[in-house]
Image 1: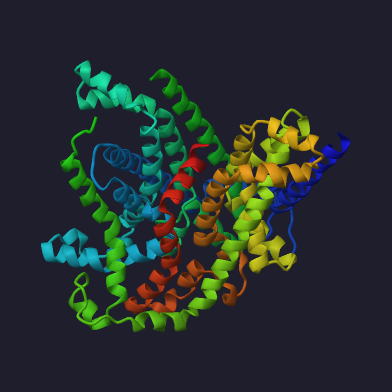
Image 2: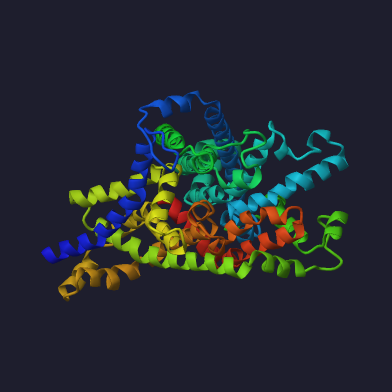
Length: 287
Length: 272
């Protein structure tokens, strides 16, 4: 028996050590440096909570949180709305079911960065051209160049791509509902709307939870689209948290300062995930 | 009972799928035209197809080099992820009643909550100090970082495999390693497909990790190359889009042939 025990140890301990060295250790280092004034090179001193106090007072950081949350909440809601509708459609008695499903899933396999580059052209050239043709002046310029509208462009790209994944999950959920339930519901004289809220939705509520949590978590990390589309601009109007940490940390000599920002971000992500899972799970029971 | 086809819904969904396909159609149209044709019409089929855009873009971005970097990263990441992560998960799954392994499980899985930006700055320092800012280092990081999620998925699956199968093999004198490779690993194929597909999509499409880890342009991956060449593409959209399309094509081809597996693999990974 002892030999088996040592085999299991050999199977796990190397992974434990490597994971610690390349994941946990850098995390601890990040936390450690957040209490110093290290620029990423040279000497450093401990500065206590100074970085944290400054992070909360820094408009640029606060703005990046506001932008990221606005972006993440709106995108999460839109993605879930669209993917629920598409999934309901794909689950109905339609033709070309497999082809349509394959098409709707296609964006999921594409590189987010390259998709964003492609959409850049749509916003810079195609949409303004169309707007001019139809006389819509408000859209005649590139919305990515407008500090008030650039975030909309990023939402569109992110939603376009993320709907694919969430649709497939909802579809998987819908396929677990036995068709007898629909028949029973229509025998009871329930309309489509009522059937959805009283039969379909409660039964796919766990999928709603997964989708909300996964989508929100993904959007809070938004990075590729920002790099590809706006570089955080115009001005600093579309700097997401990840992007600011990357930019400030690598290019701005703010290693320690952005580490403090990252720690705050970490705490917020954990808090949101916990709250979201609790809240949505309670709803599942209530329904 | 065969039900009536809902044609209205079918039409609506086809209309919606146009929204999905439009950016890709547009990308193809830009890539096969010259600037003058593009100025005349964006969406019409060209009178003359300019396939030389593709060869020019290949030359400019050193496409085959970036392609082979991406391919090497993806292939080795997937192979070693499947072989190692499943092994770790097996040891954990079969010993969850012991404190140490239970701790390991929660240790790996809870790391999923740690957002990458907190690691981003220190890991670059660490990889630089170790001389690992190259393809080996990147492959290595993908395998190690995959542990969190993959252990979660594998452990759930392995615990549903009855122990009797292993006990029979043990009676025949197989070692723990032998049991894993000969009995368990072959049974893991459905979940290996899921982990494999998710790992392919991640390693092939990832931009952030190559951006911060790879120090040299010669070892850039396909997405990274598109980013690096933004300045040189500038307003030569035809060349840029030819390059984007070539970077997207390999994974689209894989998807066309393995569409059902990819979709079911991704779904299983998320529902676990």
